Length: 497
Image (tube, rainbow, N blue to C red):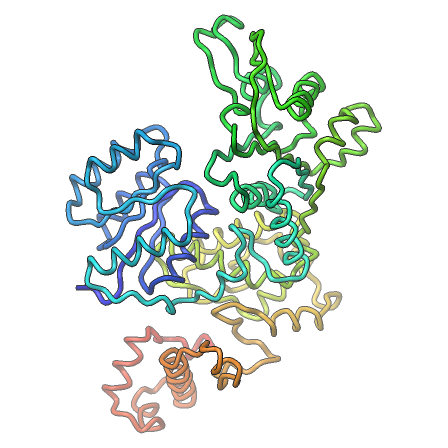
C-alpha cells in the first residue's frame, strides 16, 4: 500500500487544473499529475503508478468520453476512476451508473464533492486521509481561479460576490488583454444560483461576422443554403445559465440591435425563424476597448452600451498589483512542474527583481506563459538570469527601479519556496510566532526537515564540499550524512547557494 496516493487529474481547462490541484492539496497529501489531452493522459498512466484518476469526460471532444473511459478501464483495470460528468448530461450519468464506476462527481466542481471523492478513494486504498497536509494555505488566495491577495483583488472578489447575488443584472467587465476577463465571468457564474446550468463563452472577435449571428441565435432548417436542420444558438444553450460575450466591442451594429432585444424582451428569433423564443439567460460582456469612445464615433449603440453596463467591473492590470506576482509565480510553478513531473524550481532574488521591474503588458497570461517557458527550458533547481527571455532584460536598469518597493514585495512573499540569495533576509528557518502556534499553522516535521537541510548545506560549504569533514562538523557518521544528502537530493546545492 502506498503511504500517500498518486493522483492524476485530466481536463482540458487550465484554470480548472489550478483550482482542482489546490483542492487536492487541501484535502490530502499526495503526488499529483495533470494531463490536458488523451495522449498525455495515456503516457502518464503507462509511465507512472497512478492510484486515483480524476477524469473529465469532456477531455477529448473528438472522442466520446465514454469511449475513452472504456479504453482506460480495459488497459488499467485496477485503477480507481472518479469521473467528472456535466450536470445536465443525464444520458452520460446513467451510463456511468450502469458501469458501476468507483465514483463520479458533477461539473462544475464543488469542494464538498471533491473532498468526499478523495476520502472514499483513500479509504478504498487503505491510505490515511490528511486534510491538513500540503501547501493548502494558498487556497485562501484563490477565488474561482482568480489569484491575488492585494487590496485591489480583494475588492474585486467582494464585488463579484455581490454581483452574483443578483441573478439578472447585466455585467460589463473591463480589463486589458490577459487580465482574466473570462475567469471573472466564470467566477460570477459559479458563485451565482445559475452555477448548475451552462456557462457559454463566445469570443465576438474570433468568429467572422457572417457566422456570429447564427452562432448566437441559431437558425431554422432552410434559413440559408446548407441549413439542412435546425441549430440551437449559444443564447438558447445558455438558457438558465450565463452567456459570456468577450470583446463585445467588435460586434457589428446589426447584431447589436438583435442582442438589445434579447436584453430588453428576454426573447430571441433564430435566423430564418418567424416566432420569438423566450429565454432566461444572464449576459456578461467584456471588452478591452473604450466603449464610450466607440459610442461617440457611432461604432457602438448607445442604448446597448447602457444596457450592458448596468454593473461595470474593472480588473486591475498586473503592473498595478505587483505584490501579487510572487503568489502567482508560486501557483504557476506548482502547476507547470507538476504537469511535467519535474521538481519544483525557485527564483533567486536577482531574477525576481527583474520580473518585478517588468511592465507585464500581457498581464497574468504573459506571466503564466513565462513560467511555462522556464519549466520547459530550465533544467536546474533555480532559475538563472540566462534562463529568462531576453525581453525582460531589454529595458531593465537597476539604477532606475524602485528598490525599496521591490525589496518590500519580496520580503512579504507568500511563496512556499522563497527567493534565494535575498540580501535583505536570512535563509535560515525562523521559529514560528506565537500566533502561528496558537492557530495550528506549524508543521513540526517540515520545520525540522528545513533546519536539518540548512545545517547540511552550511557544513558542506565550510568543508569545501568534503563530506568527511562536513560529517565531523555535524558530529555525524559519514554514511549517515551521505544518506541524508541522497534522500534530500542536496547534491551540489552548497555550490549553487
